[in-house]
Amino acid sequence: MSLVIKGASLLGEQTTDLYVDDAGVLVDSAPDGAEVIDADGLVALPGLVDLHTHLREPGREDAETILTGSQAAALGGYTAVLAMANTSPVTDTAEAATRVWELGREAGLVHVQPVGAVTRGLAGEELAELGLMHRSRAGVTVFSDDGKCVHDARVMRRALEYVKAFGGVVSQHSQDPALAGPSACCHEGELSGRLGLPGWPGIAEEVIVARDVMLARHTGSRVHVAHVSTAGSVEVLRWAKAQGISVTAEVTPHHLLLTTDLLAGYDPTFKVNPPLRPQEDVEALRTALADGTIDAVATDHAPHARHDKEHAFVDAAFGMVGLETALAVVRTAMPDLSWADVARVMSTTPARIAGLADQGRALATGAPAHVVLVEPDAEVTVDREASASLSRNNPWHGRTLRSRVVHTVYGGRVTVRDGHLA
Ligand SMILES: [Zn+2]
Image (cartoon, helix red, strand yellow):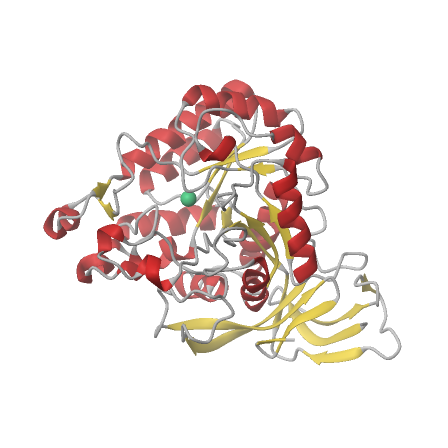
């Protein structure tokens, strides 16, 4: 099981060999009988960490399972993913969280960290078993009703107060249901009017982000804003961080590259929540990610079975797959982002937000060997059929993206070798 990773460029800078002992830890010298991985020309980063993955198990194993989602994650260079709670049943008890955690360990390809629901059944009314989930073997620290917004300010306040006691965080899907109801599916603007699609205005996100940063300030607790999509939300975050409020935020790869005009053909592949926005929002999100106003990239990998996605646009399910392409999309959208910054926004900071002490660590002696090796300037044309995910709702199909994940190492175990599951 020991490894020598030969000639990798650490964060795109100095070239070095990395040694991994048979306990899966980075060490100073080459262990005897180690497998040698030739990393000449490859960039080494700490394994990626995704704050926002939908694995669909339990309940929708036709769309994804914990195993297939873990495979997709490994192929994307991930060594940890946070599995969202909107499964069936919902992850709102210690027992349900522990089950997801165990299935992740059985798959053994990435660390699968369950996210606990904020409210029972995602109904937005009574708090779920937050403390019991935290104290379970799964050690849940991130809570989210994602897919739904915790829209009742009183419930959100109580959740923030509760998780503060153990250093937890509430990850909010910011969507005021009065301003953007359940059928809202297209950025509200000239295009939504022309297409006759229910509009999802940016203000529906911004009012919740603004409210939640004030609740974080009031409670002294920590809020995380999932999938930020508008320039207005960025302005609020910039202000809140300047005040020292404990708020962090993520952006998805698709919101960094795709724009609302893709909806002109009514292709449900591009139906996602929050919706794709105009170019000026995309520009603001890129700037905010580069300057640290947005802390992390998170995929919102949302696999859907064909029969849920292939409908008239208004009836199709929201979401797109993204684990396997995330790094390449970020590199394509923001080619000037340094490798140190890529590691910061896709590994180190998400690990810190999620409280995963063994993830996102610098590749130095004594750290667990969670490593991704990337061919930096490869051009890869995405084929949605070439995927470990069970779902094919892939908005990148046919596009050429920059960079390729070549090898992934999770705790010393090679999970991906030469771009294929090991
Ligand atoms: Zn969401």
